[in-house]
Image (cartoon, rainbow, N blue to C red; front, side):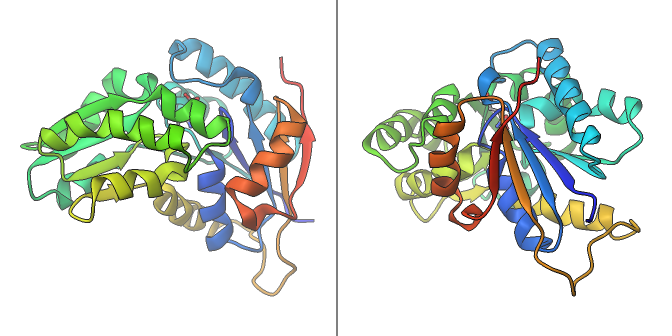
Length: 266
Ligand code: DGL
């Protein structure tokens, strides 16, 4: 049995990252913990998010995870440096794709859709001042997008209504590049792209993180071999198991054969 990759998020959002990791590394076992009982993280203070992320990391390491993916921008901003200082395993975190967006924009205006926690801190300001000099960066916290995805709504009238409320001021300000700075938002990508139209680019970080995980594992002796069985995916939620059994395969049909269980983390 290969040691698994551990992935965590405040809820189902990190499944958008899991599916990219699965595509890039189909032979790896994966254990995913979604903290739906405490979702959303976005409006919570950084120390509260950090405490949750440490508690979840302890559980993933108890399951022998060889690498942990913080598949949550809010949790990465709040905790990744402290995690790296505290634990001996490698961590891959999320970061809003400000750098590729700044390289792509033609209008010189980009908009970052994220959570309050992700765009409020010093770390985000550093990201902008390092990688988006000369570009106007508009931030738009969208907690309603997180609630919609947690409720299983990805392309419903409620989603289209929220998108039609949030996007116009950003587009009117000239944004031609939208950054999905929260892992829940790729599940709304179609509704966002349909509203924004073909002249607007939408950028998500899932694929880049999967590449990072692959390169972190390339020197790891416990890497699963290409000739083996497809890896097993185990999804654990601190929230309602019944809702997750319905939600996870709907968001990611490729996870239909994943095992699902409840986990209590205090
Ligand atoms: N999916 C998370 C993120 O990337 C957090 C959403 C939330 O819990 O507010 O930021």
